[in-house]
Figure 1: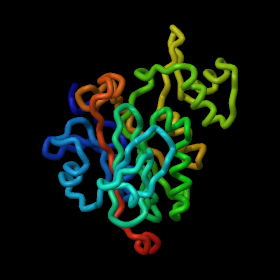
Figure 2: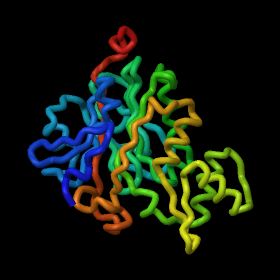
Figure 3: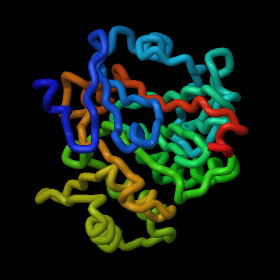
Length: 268
């Protein structure tokens, strides 16, 4: 498996002193410093990776719990790590970090204010609408949905993610905003959205990133505001840790930072 397999349109593949990471052109074009790291890192921790890239931002991370709790970055740092699955910036020069290993790392940036957010989003977080929760908190800090952009990093792909009907029903409830007891209807509806595929043996394969994309569109995003990396953490075994493949051993980090204080943001 060659490193070239990670190349794809709309994304840059970078290598710094043996550490391999990906960047979204959409975020870069809007001047957001960020990275989706692979498992190929000299030391797989934010302190090392932050220094490696020459960042001067403070480091903020979470004790991730597969929920929808959103934390202001200044409240969660190495001396006091808070429980949650989403960080939003609330002052200047902050780096927001999340770790994943099949779940989606989602980085949000506000082109107007400079606000940023980092979300750890697996099926449980998606079912609890953690994307919407994060957007609402960003709005409280002055963001508007029309100014937000989103990059979805490497995650497990649909063909590798077999789930039970109860998982599909939970996601349906969030996307359709209603309960429905007919499993056939739920399966058909999710398939039409591109979020689900039914195998010949009736196994259900779910697409986490498509679900996140549909969720973003429901929240007012358009296609031009969303960048999706298609790398599969399960299949690309040389470059990514996978919870399902490796039985929970190892994760990779993603981060986004802002260096603008509130006064500079609104004069930007």
